[in-house]
Image (cartoon, rainbow, N blue to C red; front, side):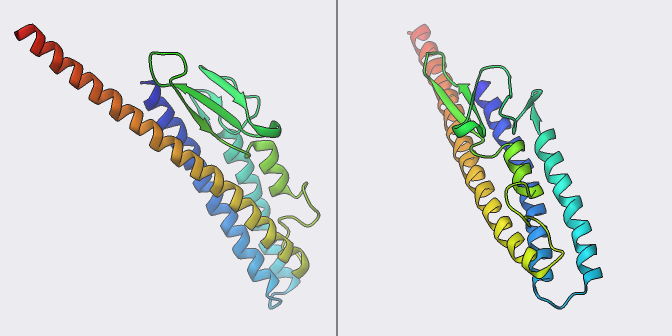
Length: 191
């Protein structure tokens, strides 16, 4: 049951990151359009309005993604089981007890992505001109920022996928053990 909860946690986080990926890719598309130099200042202002809305939605998606009441992209997250802040104060690692013995655990690591860090990258606090498409120069900076952010998100998603696979293996192994022990008990009783 804990392993299944871990799978659900990883799937919830990955689902949120899938939406974030789509939004950042849209920001990147707008930046590429703006960087082409074929758009007027009014066009860029309209593009920036969409970018601003997307930035807000990214922040909301990350801050509102919860599993069992625990904010998944929050370094101060508290929940059932062991929750340990990730590297350098960013990210959250959930340690899932998967067996009946001490140390039989699987970590579901959100990695170096949390609401504070992501919001800083997305809103432009990390670098001047981040996620701004109002000028060609800012649009080019936004392309680089979006690429860096997508790389981070993809790394986190790969880790979530690995954790989910590991937890699926645990569930399959536990199911096999129950089946084999039930069969063995039946054979012993019949003897």
